Amino acid sequence: MPQQKLFNVAIVGATGAVGEQILKLLESRNFPINKLKLLSSARSAGTKITFKGEVITVQEATPDSFKGIEIALFSAGGDVSKSFAPHAVKHGAVCIDNTNAYRMDINTPLVVPEVNIEKVSEHKGIIANPNCSTIQMVTALKPLQDRFGISRVIVSTYQAVSGAGSLAIDEMLRQTQASLNGEDIKPSILPVGSLPVKHQIAFNAIPQIDKFQENGYTLEEMKMVNETKKIMDDESIQVTATCVRVPVIYGHSESLYVELKNDYDLEEVKQLLADAPGVTLVDDPANQQYPLATDAAGKPDVFVGRLRRDLGFERGLNMWIVSDNLLKGAAWNAVQIAEHIAIG
Ligand code: NAP
Ligand code: 3JN
Image (cartoon, rainbow, N blue to C red; front, side, top):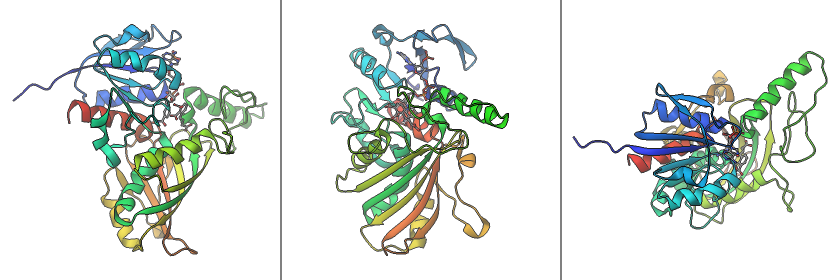
């Protein structure tokens, strides 16, 4: 039997919430690794991380970190990807980038394996992982697009704090405890670390994820609009998004109203979703079964339920979609792409 090729792999952002999940997946899926390099900022350089029983010391990322690297997984923010991904490409690596830096670049494929894995072959060194909220939505929409066509999507998200990084998880837990103790709450991270105004997340819902754009939408909302059109390869799909942060640790939930181009049968829609790759149908109202963030956390699939025909528009469909934002929304989607490159 031919020997499986082993790859030199780098993880940029290895000490972060997404990086930690990437590491767990590479280990549990026995990814074919020769050498593994763990990179961070100077802050965490020197941290020891155990991978498959071997202790690896995290190093500060520099342009030279990528010599000999064949696959580089980036999740350290867009600026870090812009600074280092070109160096990684120059050294011959394929970069799988979890940030917004290259998603809308015309030379960069934006890939969700269940939707458009064939785009990977068009890469010129960088493959972009979409935003978490987009990934779970398009995974569920793909079978409907293929069968009925989609003209319009109106989505509202209920996004977990882990989407804003490990400091946001700490902040929500701290605020919850302080509130229960009757202590003052001093928000410091959410909604956006780099903006001056902060809001309480414990026992609250914040209708702002990322910065506001000139059109009144937030950047997270515009990511959903633009990325959906690119991944589904249809500029004509109308998408409107409202993105909301809620006090959940893991798992983004989404309420969708979808207008299909052709008449549909609700039972056929359920069957299509039940059969779709990466999708689990949980839709049993009689027994109060529907997707929940607490059930989706730690699982790779996109969970879909609450399927019902719109009351006003015959070709309108309402649905509820939940997925672990750090897994299918980030780490698992990236590792799926890496496996496609490494193993086929
Ligand atoms: P996080 O928990 O705050 O971790 C950030 C990671 O980036 C840490 O490992 C950090 O290292 C590293 N880092 C920061 N500045 C760096 C630098 N100058 N050079 C090298 N490494 C640096 O954040 P996260 O939740 O893991 O998210 C990280 C990024 O992933 C986000 O900014 C976003 O771009 C992307 N992301 C994508 C999705 C998605 O929807 N696909 C979801 C979540 C996040 P230190 O430990 O040294 O600080
Ligand atoms: O807030 C969330 O739930 C998802 C956040 C994603 C995110 C956070 C900071 C920077 C991104 C992203 O993936 O779009 C970025 C970014 O890369 O711009």
